[in-house]
Image 1: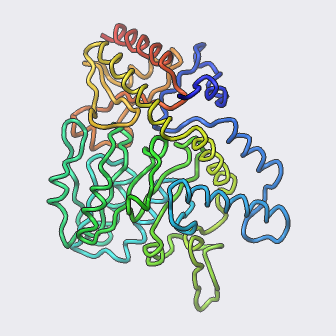
Image 2: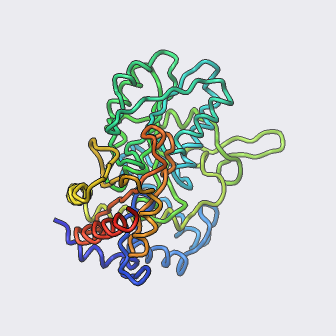
Image 3: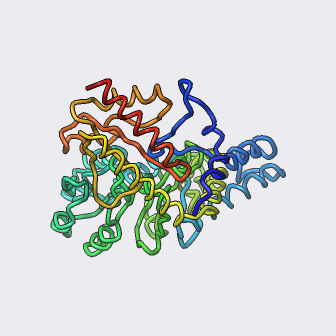
Length: 403
């Protein structure tokens, strides 16, 4: 059992009002809120030991370097990577995906096939389209069913000796559907294809074990796991990371530089050119400490309870269609008949309730359902059933005003 009221006290933003109403924050799928413990970590860095890392012999630089590398180890242990240098620190999920897409341009050739799912965020579609345009590779798509789940029979039929890469999200950001990634990974490996899993939406709810999954690459962002924006991770198997060329050139990623030739540093520095978001990475480690202290099993159980409660209450409003009804995390993506989602979002914002409206950077999903977008309410472990009750009353009011 979680002590929700105690947890809520850790999040200062939950005390504010919006439009004269207590804030109800149901946009956690876009970004989570930040606990005081992480805010304090950020303040502590800039107050006490702000310095560049890996380069200085002075005390502040050494303290910052130690804290930065300790955060890498926290991330390694959280995702159960076998070695710290298999964790590449990036600006977020999007950069992590682009790093791999750029690297595979050296290996993919005309006629090769790569597979994405119909449930992907644009950041896990566009880089692969660009790769195909550059190399002549062919992009194939795992189709989805009406309930939001992927067609695994169709997926298996797509796999063949030409398949080089498979990309899929762990959890759909638009629908909350949890994908069968272990099956997807195992089947891809049967044809010697590499697999990248976009874990951005799963990471706040599910503690992924990259070794148990046997995944080649796993990516996520700190800002969805109670951490700061502008920080993310790329997990890659050591053998793959050694094969891939550097993504960016500059300081830190080099071994020796002459005007005749440059040699590159080893892992992880080969992929970490320039001064990183030092404070953000350290705060990412603090965010993982915070969430692990609460416990992911307890978080997952409580969020599922909120999901079930909200789903029942919302369906009782009437004229509601929920998209994505399979196994899912704490996301409800819905529409009310004959009402545009933007109008609902605008009205309930006046009542202090934050939800997301639109296509959620997943236009192919909206095209599949033949809709302009959805209202997406996404819950976190600091939300309450009382907030859901207020949300439902706001939805009823919006429905009455707009019908």
